[in-house]
Length: 285
Length: 202
Image 1 (cartoon, rainbow over the protein chains, first blue to last red):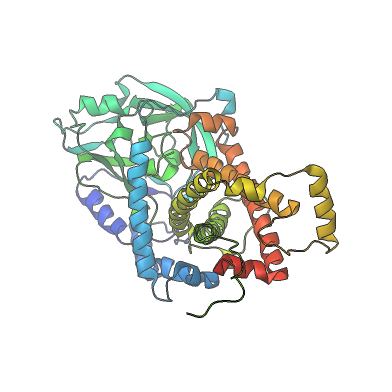
Image 2: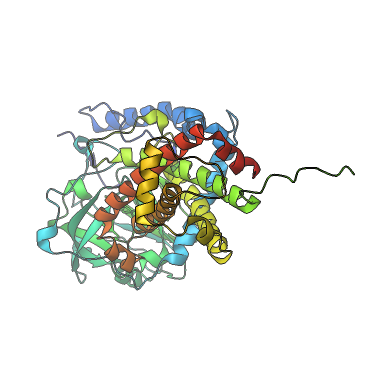
């Protein structure tokens, strides 16, 4: 298995990755050459993304002309930009509608251990062979933004906090779902502990695999939102986001970041890897 | 002013019916074709919809279309049901449906004997088909709500047997609606005066 190893160098790695990720990335099906040198592999991965970028920008222009459906939308060929702008405006409206529909007292259904999906599927914007490997001893969680205590967290520190478990359904934007057993720290309690301004609007996440996403504060404070350290009673395996992921049964899979390197509280929407390409930002279920 | 000797042909579909019909047709086509693309992302049947007939270009694009057109379908559908029920048109046109008569009309229709002489009067097969279309959209919207917001609609989720069952119900609703659409379009080709009436009202 070829893995990408990261050593904790806060700032350079995270910022660099974020810059790379803000370039429109390749679709999840794109084949990335698997090389033995991790840095070289990363460089190639980023170049392949740059090559893919124009194709990605065409995604809706191509769409409105498909099968003559341009007639139905009232858009001429090349009018994709207007259609795209309209659809993105509706998606912002859908963010607000979902924010209004979100009831912090509605809990996602929970399941028994016998109902857990085995094996739980791996899913990311790259193959399982390229999964990110983070050294536990090197790892620490950076916390920043509108919080009082900015000291980074070690795994030992997180494991010392009160732990809880949930068996909930993970729903993917692709439609499939799987039931998993997750354990860790209730996120609202963690936010409280770092003195987060819970009147702020967003919590953003930057991850070791170039992924980034953000959530609304109401969901961050939901009782089932879990800073996840274990899967099925074991240390969180690398396929599922070792060492730390955020598990939210009230959100679709792409809103649940794995391999978290940094989290921050903000009033500016930090967007997200898929969200910036067109997936709905709220992404709630 | 020249007095007209013959009175104008009777109005078959008032303007609100025509506007809502074509709004619904647009919403349904967008939802259908973008929904096919979404289904393709994770098919649960040994069935893959050819990408050429789908809308959106990729999953993210299809989802944007789907979650935009749903508003048109729902708002238009609620308006239609409100006006149609309050104004009595639904009851007048679609009711009653009597099983023996429906059977008789179905046999006649399949033998090519059923005619559309008075477009203001729906035969039993039409009534049943149009009521089916309305109910089918209700099922699609309810199962769609469970797929979109399964945590926020616990009662609806339970009624539909949970998230995974709701996916199948939504797919079956799509298949039913697509079946209706195919028959509907074929019948329109067979009786083009019905298309004229839905466009011009007479």
